[in-house]
Amino acid sequence: MLTSQAPKDQTYVATVNAAGAATITVVPGFKPWLIRQVSIDMPTAPAGAVCVVRKRGQLVTPMIAAGDVAAGDPPITLYQGEPMTIEWTGCTPNTQGQALVIYEMLEYG
Image (cartoon, rainbow, N blue to C red; front, side):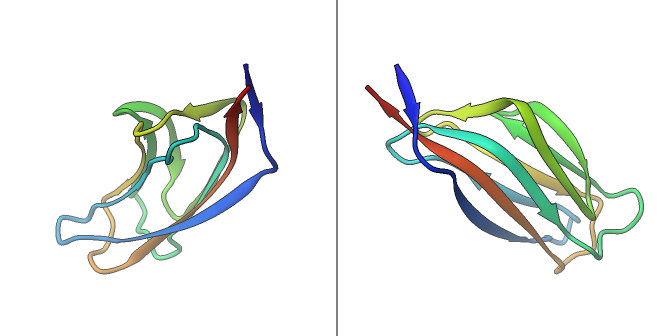
């Protein structure tokens, strides 16, 4: 059985490359994470820019590139070494995007 600890949060930053893309990769350590919320912020993202959240490359949800929140049931469970990515495309090179990930660390027991 898995039990959860008190919620934690982690902030990540990515810089848009010359192709207009930026990616943040979230990978838990030895304990699984239960992702409760992903909040993104790139206020200078142009109209038409896109942001998506993926788990192991599979689409979880699209988001508004300039700023949005993905939350609600069901939460996303990430196991050791399992990546979740936050990917922006169509953005202005050298700008930065931020993501706040709110999660609970899971314990076996």
